[in-house]
Length: 114
Length: 111
Image 1 (cartoon, each protein chain N blue to C red):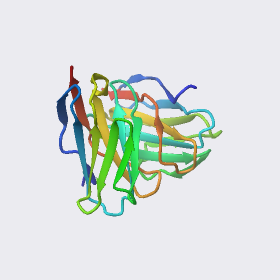
Image 2 (cartoon, one colour):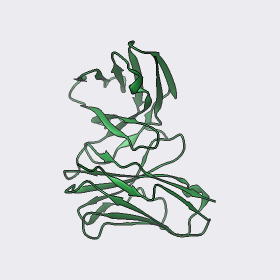
Image 3 (cartoon, each protein chain N blue to C red):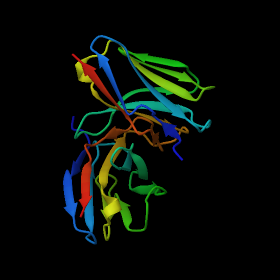
Image 4 (cartoon, each protein chain N blue to C red):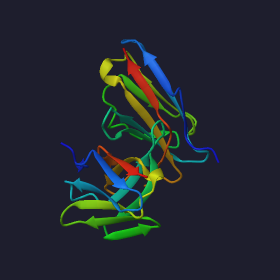
């Protein structure tokens, strides 16, 4: 079956622009996660959804970052007034169980802020 | 402060030999560990995991060893194949969904 998909795969934004990154999890997966991966680093946790409920947003770096999953499937990560330090790969992952340990990752969206 | 460390950024191994990738952690509360493999332009793919109640888990060519007293885990790949060339991340959690990832080790298997 289809894996986790993300769009766009690449995004270039001018500093100050707003961006929206989309994640389509594996159908039926309850849990959804967003990670930020800076160059040369491992992925860092941003936020976690269980169905439509955002249970943990402790990793969001500032209030410019906002995530939603209104119907418990597709999720959008929005970054307002982008800054150069937001440049990174944003990874989405999903999991079939609540709080499950094996997460299935999408290919990521590479965001470059100029 | 990096709670999960992969001190070798890269490793080269001849095809057919053993690859050993290492990972150290600082938080003794971690009780579940995973290895992910990542190819360029793709997301990380789950490889193998181990719970802190075990010291070894094996899956085909891949074996993960956990030394809790040393706060160290390692991934052994035997025999190494060119298709294993990728970046390998270890991750740790406290029995929750929140993984802490290391910075990765780039493995190159030479034909």
